[in-house]
Length: 188
Length: 188
DNA sequence: TTTTAAATGTGAGATAAGTCACACTTTAAA
DNA sequence: TTTAAAGTGTGACTTATCTCACATTTAAAA
Image 1 (cartoon, protein in one colour):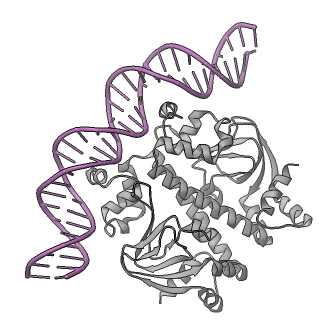
Image 2 (cartoon, each protein chain N blue to C red):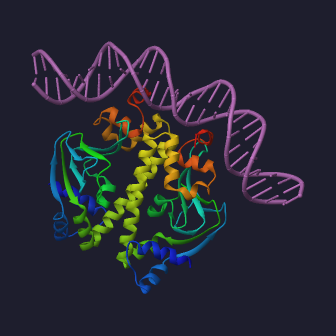
């Protein structure tokens, strides 16, 4: 069952009774998306945070030259949103779309805030997740500043071995901040 | 009074009574540091998160070539730590030291967790701060991936005008992920 | 299965940024 | 106030990476 994945992730941080988990799940809705479908489009509202239970997504920014820069991939057990748009109820600056058909549990910002208010365990859970995300982003910044393309690729390989054969190399290049030609020329 | 800065920042997010604020402040200690002094050294413990009330600090990573990469500056009203070391009670991978003599309110991770447990308003406050930090890091990643040195410098100027004349250009270069020579050659 | 589109590899040349070197200026220390 | 250290600017050369082009392979759609 798709909710069990969420439960497992939550319970790695805080224990919940069956009733508590049913209460939590009530704040989410199950969503299905097709390959290439947008979940979020720049300029539009981005009212949902998604916990992916199957499939694969990417969030990315399109710069003034029309170039895509991938900020995040999200497969099973990952969360994905445009955090700025979501938390501050602003129009999206990012796009999110499906690399594969995807099923996710989605929660609105209002529901999330209500849930955190009603259930402090969940506030604690989200706190832990956000902190871990913050740490991961700091590492990514250091990686962009201190490593060359090849080292960044190798680090990606090590960190997300599953994704290497599941995502086109040109998308990995975009995630790493390198052109697809340069990635293709690496001795890897 | 140095605590009032903290109160003001907290009250921009959650209102506190005088008693509540006194309770909160009890979890912090006032620390003074001299210019060039380390707050955190790579390899050692990093048991404190600092809320700066005066002065200026930097956190940075030293790569295998001995090159410094600045992750963050922190002046009045900013928080600074090695989040990975702090939250997970690990040895630091970052260094933090003073660009200017600094006064800060410091809190241990144990005190922070106890405070969040005792005072849900503070948990909410830290949640908001961490989320805002996460969003800022995402923007920095996109900036590193999509902008050239000059655009990054101009963006820094716009975002932190106060820091431009307070920090040596070579440190700004390190923060922007560019050599000091290249920064010096920009037509800015 | 056939057709079309997407992904990938690779050459050739352009370019942003890095590195090393040294002079000059500003700031801090003795 | 003198001395030393740190910060900054700039020339000359190197290099990683980008861009454009086109061929080839692989995957998806008709």
